[in-house]
Image (cartoon, rainbow over all chains, first blue to last red; front, top):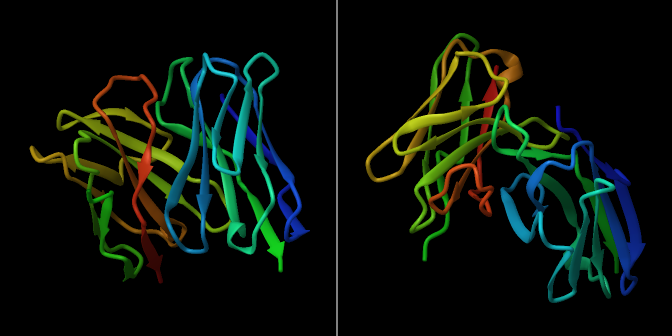
Amino acid sequence: KQEVTQIPAALSVPEGENLVLNCSFTDSAIYNLQWFRQDPGKGLTSLLLIQSSQREQTSGRLNASLDKSSGRSTLYIAASQPGDSATYLCAVWYSGGGADGLTFGKGTHLIIQP
Amino acid sequence: DAGVTQSPTHLIKTRGQQVTLRCSPKSGHDTVSWYQQALGQGPQFIFQYYEEEERQRGNFPDRFSGHQFPNYSSELNVNALLLGDSALYLCASSLPGLATGDEQFFGPGTRLTVL
C-alpha cells in the first residue's frame, strides 16, 4: 500500500525566507507526483506536476524536485510572502496496481509572518 | 475557461439520510474523480468515472455510489449517512487518459455536515 508522509506538519517563518517542504512515499512505482496548495475550507490548487521520468519542475518562485529511487520530493519556495500562507499537499499517482487515483499526504501547514 | 465546478457549496443532513453531490469537469476533460477530505487529513480517493463507467474505486463502502452523464458531469451519492461522513468532498477532472496519471484539477468542494 502506497503511503505518503509530509514533514514538517506545520511551519512558521518570517517573510522573505526561503523554505523547503518535504514529502516521502513508500513505493517508487509512480506515474507522477503533484504538489497542491489548499487555503482554509477551500479546494486544491495545483502548483506543480512532476512526471516519473522528470527530476524537477519550476514555476515562478516554486521549484519541486523528485527522487523516485529514494521516494522523496521537495518543494522549495523562494522569498516567501504572507500570501504563501496555506496548507501544502503532496500526492502521488501510484502505478503499481490496485485502486487508482492520487494518494495524499496530510499536508504541511505553512504560516508566513509579515 | 471554466474550471471544475461543484454544487452545493455546503450541505447539512441528519444520520440515515441520503445526499447527492454534483460536479462539472473542466472544459475538455472527460475523466472525473471524487475524494473525501476529513478535517486535518489529506484527501482520500473514492472512485473515478470515465466513459460513464466507474473505472477504479478506493476503500469506500457501497453506500458511496456515483454516476457520470454523457456531458461528463458527475454525481456522488451517499446513502444511510453516518456522522463520520462529515467531510469536504472534492471533485477532480483530467484530460482523456487511462491510468496515465494526468494532472488533476480540483473543484472548490462541497462541505457536508452530518448531524
